[in-house]
Image (cartoon, rainbow, N blue to C red; front, top):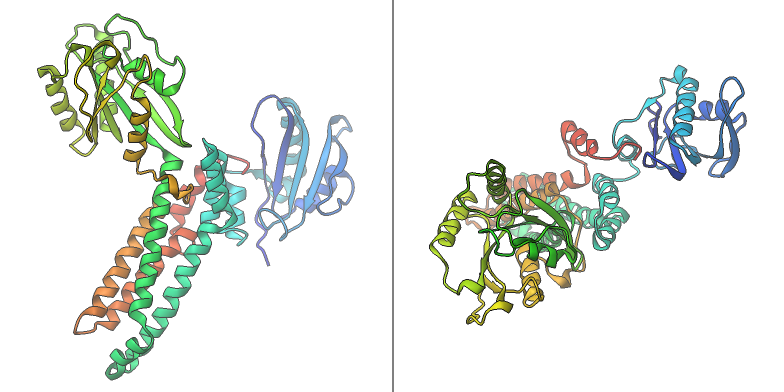
Length: 457
């Protein structure tokens, strides 16, 4: 049986003017609230046209009411959905009326993600599927939406469950030998534990690779454009964005603050940050912009250092100092690409390599090659077909499981044949994988995950 918790209510659609607005209720007492509101027993899963009236018989709105008795509902509890006109005032009146009708049942406003949290707690979905719902809502590209839909369908969870069942079986076999130490080696070899464990490891590594690809789709790459004034940072940003998002003039120092624009290349979100030109200045506003430039460099996934190719192909002393400072600020962990811009205005010898690229933001020359480099730095592989729209915690859990399985294999390879320790490493790997689907997860982390959801979902 599914647990029926205190009832909650929330607006399930976005606030503001719209053709339709939806109010959702879930929990204990919803059946009684439904009858008091609609003045009849609603047929399960049927849309019924209702005139919603207040306690004085005044019409609030007219719309549809749909009852989903638990456990056959989104949350697993009794759920009532009210579909009305999308008037903020009208929806507020109806919400207030529902709260009054539900006072005796302690009906209250829902917390962010509380409907989905109840679906998880009631076993309707696992945690990876619950997170996929939020990712589908937040998807910034068609590729991200498709990947999130796959995870919501359970593709990711099914793979994790296969690994878990295989690990549980191997643990059982391995731990069974502990009572017969003299037969450990023969028993392990007879049941092919070592090669079966190796197969699990290879499968986890494959899923981890797909998850890393999905992480790129979900979070994208933060790219910071830096360089001296007037080298064409804003022009390059406009060229990559495909529209005039930054002001471009011949006046040095036109860009005084960071400008951020998210673009998509092959469905991958790239967050481009145009920064103030780096130079010595007494202008206090420009100084603040330069300080913010260095803060952006600290948080970058990739730095594009622009230089003016029309001034020659030799890196100036000033630019060399900038490169050294960028490496220092970024602690040498952020990749840097040298972009020679304005090649349409000169005839310098172009010798592109892994870190030097030649472009014209004005004509578009060299931009396709640069875009491919941006995807390569992100780690994107076109043949991945989207991957799993994974979160950071999923990838960490897969890394953790991989480490424990590798340790278990090592212990089984040793001459001493540390079967007991190998079995413990398998248990830790199982525990790590269980975190992904929520079978093993601290309550405080659970609260943190659902707090990022929108209210009403």
